[in-house]
Amino acid sequence: MIRRWMDALAPHDMLIPRRLLALVYLVAVMTLTSATVIGFLGGYMIDTGHHAEERAVALSEYTRQLDIKDARINALTWQIIRGAGGHDQARHAHRRDDQRRFTGA
Image 1 (cartoon, rainbow, N blue to C red):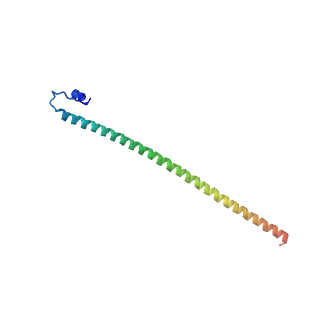
Image 2 (cartoon, rainbow, N blue to C red):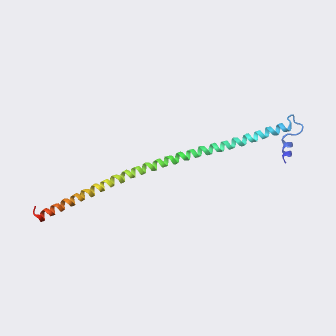
Image 3 (cartoon, rainbow, N blue to C red):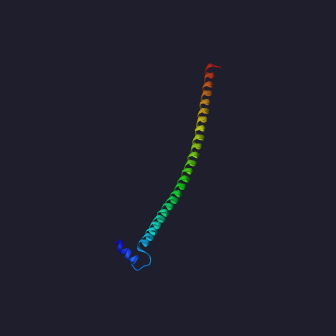
């Protein structure tokens, strides 16, 4: 089959020897193949880079939202602690008042 291709591509009456022509075709095919592979790999790397940037942006936004929620939870927790502490203080004051009433102090 390769002989038929070589006969079709380089007949015997050509000025260029068949081996040289075969070598030129081989180099051309290898160059095109390597260029295609490099092109596909380059495109893949660029595409992967864009996806990595999108993931990084999404993760930073998610982290920012978690920080905001964490700050809100901390603020609410401190409000509850202060409220509970204030409630406990009021309860203790009420007990002291009750004790004073019963003891007559």
